[in-house]
Length: 358
Length: 128
Length: 130
Image (tube, rainbow over all chains, first blue to last red; front, side, top):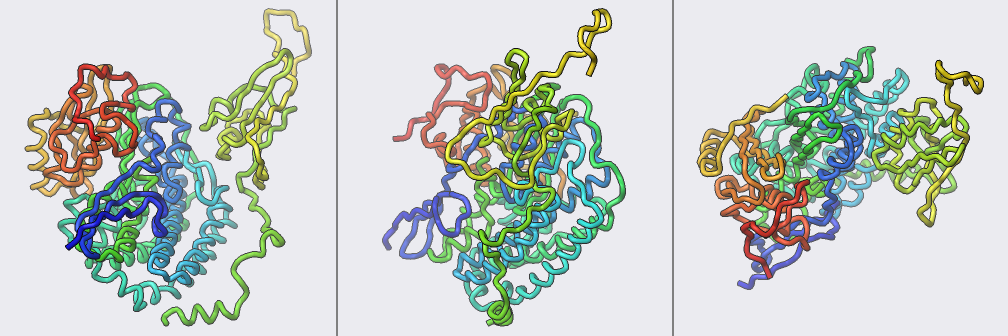
């Protein structure tokens, strides 16, 4: 039994961002996995000392490109709680609309990468073709495809008029039809099942103890989703977390697929509940005190700890992103796998390393 | 085999991609593109420079003229300066700046606005 | 406004973490913040069914804290990060990156996140690797 140490990453075709795993392999079976981070550390939390609390919104958005609006939503929510401001109802509903559009495009991106990881390139292209419709929605309503930059402390700074709302609803009808036409391929195709079912199993107790977050937790049977905290406009929207019980890569993929379809429904609910109101509340004073807020990003639970002392510069901005929480469970499920299954399992946690290392 | 209907549909329909650069899409009206400053309206108050998250705008004075410089490679196109400008001299085009081969700074100069006369002094120039 | 946090000392930390784990709480993360020139604090955030409970641990800068990664495996990554950023040493870390988690070139005893830099000479430093 010969032991070899094989480096996985930091550059690997399945990885959207660089992470290094030292895999100790004994004759094709992985025995141990040691993660190494540090390839995209930008020190964004440190910038809080140099940029005031309004400029930090733009910094915080750029922690991650795919979940950028939800990062700034969490940050603005925290500052609003610290200063005792409440965003108007229209702003809270608009935040839900853009958050769920972000969730959809993030999950479609991941589903495409997932298909690409086991060589199913045509499915990858079809999924990203659907995703382009949502990027167009982003650009037409907010001004930018990826980093939409719509949140301000107290509300949002872009609005949707009647024509745009109709266009979003029409696009969602087409997007839903396209996704459903690919449903049997993604969930039941023989190649997909052979590469993902029964591989990389994380039991329910282990997922909870190891601190997994998001679809990794819900794919193992724990029904926990931070949207149940009813932040932003979720207090008026009917929502149930999507849960699968198998705990393998297929279950995690199925959770994300079903969440995409659920997000279409959430956007429709939010658009119907838009009232005519202000877009943002006026902000007076400076942030003081400490606050913890949590939101549900596409990859899981994100926690922000903010501390201010009455100055326009915040004392501490601490961000805990979901992939940071998902790396210890990854290190725990890799032992025992075949070496060829490692890329698919690593991708099934939806690694967003730029979030992890900020 | 489950993807066969999609494959056949794609085989007999037009490509989903545009033939760029021969076929260019009209930009959306709200796209945040290149930042431009109408220097004749600018009052050189410096609000844009204070609010900018990437600190890429510098506003200064040279004698009777004010200068407004933009490090356009550092600009992230967020549009905070556009919302902060009190006289709406800043705006964003809906097309993006074309690529450049060297980092540079755009500097615009304009006349400083005349100061409004104080009540205790004799008025020296007509108020704006 | 302030968050609800129970103050705790370093010697009771592991016992409290074990108790919370037995009651079904999971560790979300740890946050560290500097208070003044000589003190900092580490907050431990635990979650159970969407309710957060926090522990606040005050310690001198460059000090030593027992690690809870033996009890809660997920803590190893965040404790290594706190070590890299604030120069705190954790005793009994399950997987110790020796201060090289985020950056291969840092010395093992630096605290880049502290605005007021700690005097390096009087600190207990972990053994140098290589």
